[in-house]
Image (cartoon, rainbow over all chains, first blue to last red; front, side, top):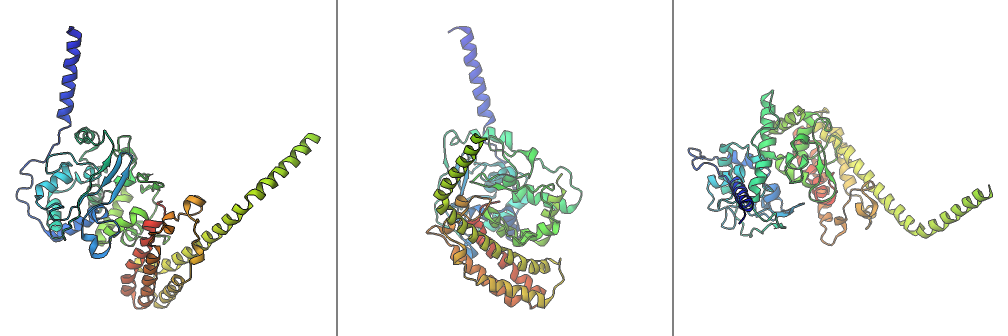
Length: 292
Length: 161
């Protein structure tokens, strides 16, 4: 073999090894949850603020059935359709998951088997969650009814079926930094946590780049609806001119200041937000109006 | 001059022929648009009356039992109107365009639950009629379900905005 070819082969090998290394799933340290114990009551607040039921409750369910997290909600995207899995505490769900497993899923985007999860689970938001909140959430989830519905596989096209590629995606699109880096009041601080670490408002209200990551330079400025027609409105202060009281009331009842009502996916968001404390809904309003 | 005249006549003739060919379609569209206008007026009346109740619940407007009862009675009466002619098949956003209506074709699909949702709204409005005059807390207790019943339809049957 000619030396130049040999060199080329060597470079290819080095690049491949580097990509393999860079794309590896990175879990939390094994002792990350040491010393933490869960409180189901606090976990319920995390559950509603995190909007878990919006996707994991069976489509169309209401009332008590809304807490049977059998999954099956379809998230259509340019990369294919993601199907939310069963996360009820039964054998078809997350029975057997440790709090460490849940923390890895939410904060690292890694499954108990050590594989990358798809970012349809908004771990690019949950990466900022406090570990205590994960433990509390686990305690709450463990007390919910089990469902024996099978989780269905995502309907994705090649090359998006290769989970390993998500390791590189995460390097480009996942960061635990806050978007709003300075907070002036405790209300805004709490609101920032609720929005940027739990509520994942930005996942719909911020437009995405070509690989499906959030375009953080256009934070909350509205976006085309990734799952069909229409668009998701801007909620940055230049467009959303509602008072903090208006925003908090909308999150509680779904009524806009003109007494129109929330529609589409936002109706499901309200169904979670109505369980928050009035102070927390107000904190979200303070955060949104504090955005630049 | 003659040429311009001929051109004008030609255009008029073409216009008339064209118009008569599509006049049936026009007639239908007109009727559909009228129905859209009627139901949007209905929604405006809902919003106007809920506006007073919501304003009181929110604390923007001082609570007044008589005014609240009157608005809630209006709302309950409105919720019982026969709306069958307001929602003709084909008056959806695909057929008429998103600028005209946000109503999705799913309303008219076989598996549509829109009737059920409307019943839930009527029930919530009736509930509010009984609650609104009974003090601010009573009104506040009823408004959550009312909002949810509005969202019940809008979640599935109205185009996202």
